[in-house]
Image (cartoon, rainbow, N blue to C red):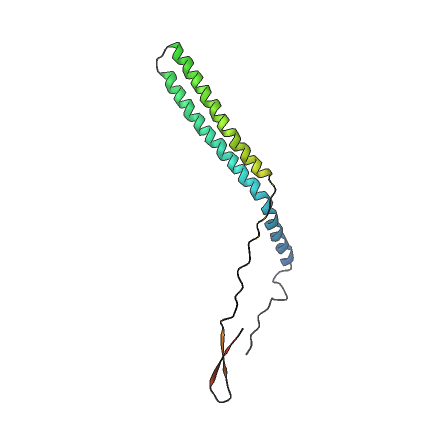
Length: 140
């Protein structure tokens, strides 16, 4: 007995086509907005790293200011603090610019190759012959 399974001709919902097209549209558009989200996340991580390093520099500066020192030491602490802050900005700006530039690049979808096609079907069918013997038949 042959059993054939095919696609159902009727859908379970009247809105099936609408939802199917909506899901396909979301899949297509996500290919374009995901790089923007990744770039925004990278930029936010760089800015958060900058803020953490600046907070460390500020705590170090405050520690130096709490120690009794000469006016020259206070001036040196201020100069070191602002030099550190400026250096951190100089290090961070190119990385943030690279993250923003990555978002401006054209989006090209990657098409994955299909899996290799099987050369033969390994299904073995058994047919009964008229004499009652079982004959082996391979399906190609």
